[in-house]
Amino acid sequence: MSLHDPLKTGDHAAFMSSYLDALALVERLHRLLLDVIKDEFERIGVLEINAVQALLLFNIGDHEVTAGELKTRGYYQGSNVSYNLKKLVEMGYMHHQRCAIDRRSVRVRLTPKGRNIRDVVAALFSRHAEGLQSKGVLGPDGIVEITNSLRRVERYWTDQIRYIY
Image (spheres, rainbow, N blue to C red):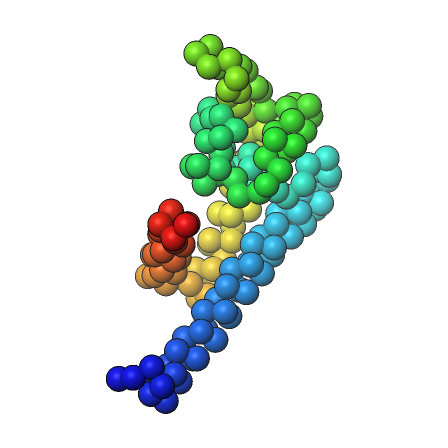
């Protein structure tokens, strides 16, 4: 089949259109997730932290990590991780401590106050998972299929970053 074959061109255009729709959807879903978290915290009267900070606390969970590990482990995707860590420490949601081996490195972990926030987010996500299943939006097979597909895209993009440049 040549590059100018109309079938191949049509297939590519259709795939490209779906790909761009998927990219826009991932972006919208992330923003919606943050809005959902923000609304939950407004509902319960916790206004001092934002949704990004709450999600960061949820993702850290019971781990003790360095700021660098937050990105490499996929706990945090934002560009202002240092700012959010500093604010969370100042507000008493996280402990920070210099690493005994590498004094340049700071390790962070949740305080009881931070674990409370993590628990609120965990309960919210649990309600959502239950609702998705009970309302027939997604079942176990559907969520596994979505997750596996997104992981394949993640691996492909990671490979592009590592090997193209």
